[in-house]
Image 1: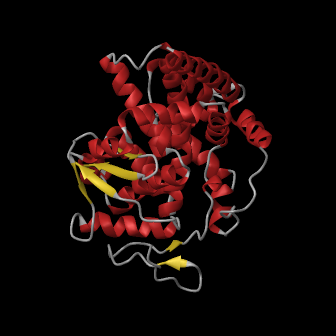
Image 2: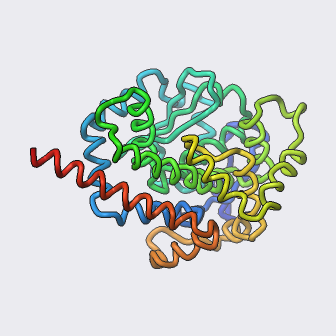
Length: 339
């Protein structure tokens, strides 16, 4: 990735994409651990430590092949470049510079009115922006969304997110590969997926470094509408109801687990992000106090302790679910190979 126009303060110019783009602090060599939510981190660490779990997922992935999956996601989309969607290209370049991404991963725009975006792939990650998202959001709001998806890639979420989408679609079709064991895996993946969104929200905030704009984007993603007909202050008050209810966040996650949602509610996400800012983590990162790539990671047990503090027994329930599901899938695959 080409170097940005840095000044002595470690900031990057917006690249001339918009006249009112505010200079951002370049987070040089930032580790994804810096923004990862403890519940997400502990859950993902648990996934990776389970015997055969990655092998099982990659076996399912290999059933289709990475290239056909990548092309299927991209078949109804246009790749962003200097000549295709130049506005998005400029904004995305700024986001990659601010988060000091290892590379500028491919990004595509897909024609669909649903306001959403996603990061997918296995060895070669890419981002899909729905055209409804591009039309609804202004420059900084769209940059937040791209920073969010880039955060997923840098946190190495994409394999699991791609498999979640595939398993959801296969389950809806009644495909034979999605038996009881794979359905158990899907339930656990959905629970982790919702927690991973909280991490990516933090990455999106670090990409544009404007909390009000981020929460304004969440308001718009939740309800649509124009900025002049909505109130961020009221939306924040709505979010405060969750925090005022003590352990309500964990209870909401459990309900979502039952209704098969891959994303937590936007109001809950506003509440979680405000909590992270108020704890002082956001300001410390902008001061340069963050973990760098290559720094030693804290022990796995410390991650579990953090997650326990954040969601009480939620992380343990998740890990237990994953352990049982992975064991069932592993046994199922071994049985099929013996036949």
